Length: 185
Image (cartoon, rainbow, N blue to C red; front, side, top):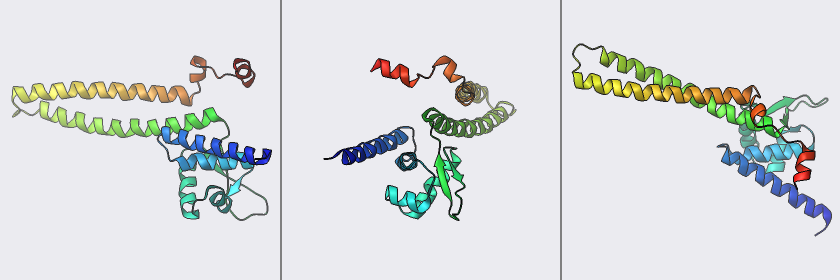
């Protein structure tokens, strides 16, 4: 195997590694393959080029790109002389992780806050109902305490998300510079 073939094999392994990382974050592996394709090409790619690079259909590629734009890890790029949409990706590994992590958990917080709000209203209604027995009221109070614990938990997640979005996480867990990593190897 010559050097070019070995480099191509390494590029493929890295692409698969990024795809596996995406899966472990709870996202489709195809997102990782698209990131790798654009990153290794070193320029914005259009739908046809990405479909060719990844072996996906243009329809599926379009869906993946919409997801990536939604997660703020890809964006359309202007390419002079082309009427096709071209896409670039976030090249900062840290920012990609932050964007994926925070969008996922932000959705969880919003969804669960809505649910907890409805639950609290129902429990208040039960506790204030003059026809509710003392046993039912006591059980409703217990459920309310459980709901308050859940609210506190989602508040904590929200603050963790803010820690990442504000980049203050790097004050707690600093990034290592490449030179520092080289010394460790």
